[in-house]
Amino acid sequence: MAPKGAYSEELTRAYDRRHFGGRSGQYILQRDLQAVQSLLGYVDGLILDIPCGTGAYLVPLVEHGHDVVAADASPPMLRVAGQNAVDAPRVLCDVHHLPFRDGAFNASVTLRLFSHIPKHALLPMLQELKRAVRSRGILVFDTFRWTPRRWPLFRRFLEQSFIHVLAHDEVERLICRAGLEKVGARHLYLFSPLWQRKLPFWLLRSLTAFEQLLPPRWLLRTFWACTRDPASDDR
Image (cartoon, rainbow, N blue to C red):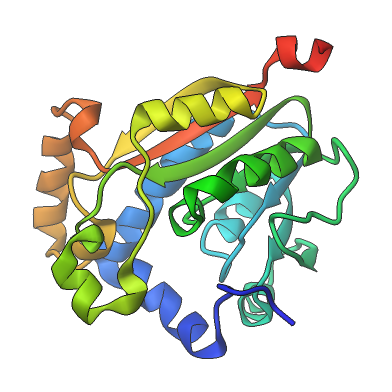
């Protein structure tokens, strides 16, 4: 049985269209991937992609030459990822209980998940990811600093729209408490990428150029990279 919160068959079929459909959606996907790749740098070894979802990030990582294990708690998501015909093992598992040995991976990529996890559950989840990544390995994840989906109007009419937000200082404290050290961050999107996807492509490109002039505190999504804090490994 898939853990609570895993994507159903119906939601899986709509996922790529909802997030990355059209030319604007593909542009947003490329922005995400550029942020991830810049934070990963050159990783010589195995990467854990969890949750891999439909393979939107998995396929480019493999095509970029990375060795990747695709993991997800949703059987429909894993089936769709497998249909993308990339050479990556697939594992059905929960991010809170990874069926991998300690230090099995050189890096992990965890996207579009932290915003769905209550704050009290983030620390053990991050520690479990840390356990599966070798010393000096890189953990990449993203968080939302704010979102209109927290507004009461959305909560009234769109029950599944609620997501959890974290201020930058909250994320940095979380990284420290997990025994990790921040090594990089990329800040994107003035407002929800789900809404930006619906913009005409020319307008989206103009908005992207404008965003690059803004301070990070104005942008709502941050991609983080961290590694094991050497001091915590010695304790």
